[in-house]
Length: 79
Image 1 (tube, one colour):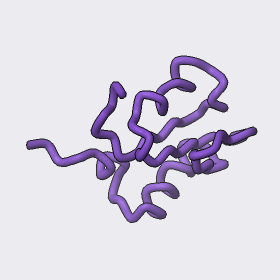
Image 2: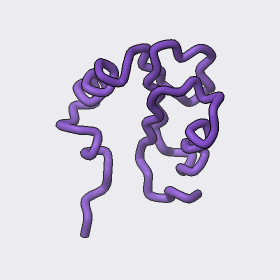
Image 3: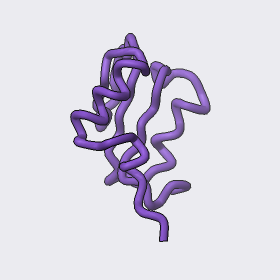
Image 4: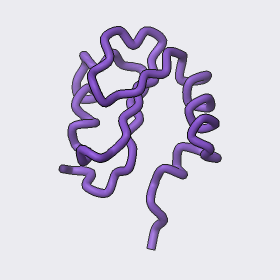
């Protein structure tokens, strides 16, 4: 995996049909949580959690649901 330490991947504004965004989550390890934020997510692949909203609304909603201050809180602390 290209992002071996990723705990989560958030893909925004794509139906997962357009590359390179469609392939980003594949770079993360299988254990990573996967989120898709899109107005019309369409068919959501297994393992993804869809947030059917614009980025402006969906990202704050997702951070609140995950009890994060910002999406940067998903990142591991820098040493």
